[in-house]
Image (cartoon, rainbow, N blue to C red):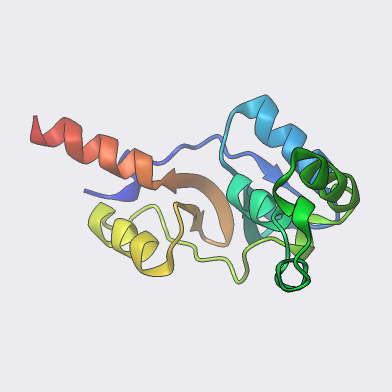
Length: 146
C-alpha cells in the first residue's frame, strides 16, 4: 500500500515570514496539528502546535535562575505575547522530511518514528501534493486488520 491511499490532499500551509500568532490562528481555525511551511512553491519546513508550545515553555536560563513564576499561566501569557510577533521560520522544523505519494505506508511510518515527527509533507515532482500523519497510517492499518 502506498501513501497516496491515506494522505490528505488538502494541505494547510503558511509562509516562513508569517507570524506565530497567524500560525496559531490557522491551526485553530482548521483544527489541524501542523502546517507545511511554503516559500515560492517549495516546502521549507513544518510547524506544529507542539513546536509553538515548546517555544512557550521556560528556557534553560529561566530554570537555572530559579524563577518561581515559570509554571504560572501569567508567565506563559507573557511569553506568548512576545513570541507571537516572531516569524514562523524561527521555530519551524527544518530541513523538511518529505515523501512521495508512491512511498509504502510502512516506510513512511518508520520515517516518522525514526525522525520523531508525526506528519510528513507529500511532494511529487517538486510540488506539494498532500500530507500524511501518523494517525492516518494507524487508522488505515487498524481498518485493514479488523
